[in-house]
Amino acid sequence: MDIDEAVMEVNQTKLSKIIQDVQCASEAHLKVEVVQSSSKALVKSGGDLTSEEYERKFKQTELKYAQAKEQLSFYKKEVKAQVMLKRSTKKELQEAVKQVELEKMEKVRVLKGLDSFLEEHETKMKVFINDKNDLVGDWTRTTNEKDAVLRQQVNALKTKEEFLNDANKQIENYRQEVQEKDVSLVSLEKEVCSQWDEITALRQKVKLLTSQNNSLKADVEYLEEERSQRRKTKWYHRFVLWRRCGSSPSPQ
Image (cartoon, rainbow, N blue to C red; front, top):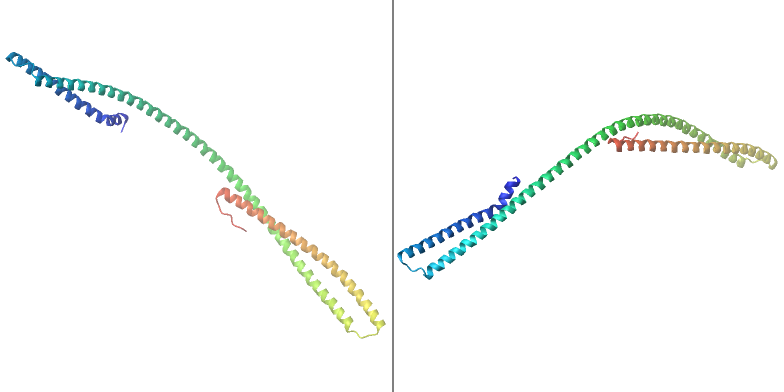
């Protein structure tokens, strides 16, 4: 429904009322003419012109006619005001439509700019992802190499631990031998001194092996910590890539 139809629908009731009032006014005017004609006829025929009935009807009809003319004038002014309102409303709607079109064009321009920005950003992200994939590959190779070295050192540590256990067993055997020997005090002291010299040498050797063992343990812990840090770093970069690219990383 356009503006004209909307205004016509709003004023339909008032226009119907105007037509009805005009018809009433016409009928009232016709009645006045009839009364006047009847009065003239009575004058010609010698009738009574001062009849209260004709005078009262004449005044009532004349009053209704005047009221109808006054109401008709009021509705004419009302229709004119409605026409002016319709023109003003139509102009406001045209301005609103024009403003909406301008806003629509501005939004289209902004969306085109965003499309260009997203395309450029997507290209940069592809380059960034390729670089990070290469970096992750390098880190993976380095981690595998360090894992191999770590396994070798762990095996060497196990070998030294076995040797240390054997040395401890040998010391215990020497102690048992010292206790079991039933010799004289002098020979026993000499033998004990000799055994303790060997024990001292073994203790020095055990001390050296213990020191080496602690050093190897520290190296292993350092390598394990470094490997853990590298795995965390690799997983973090894959997580970042997943957040940016939308693909789920798979731990290795």
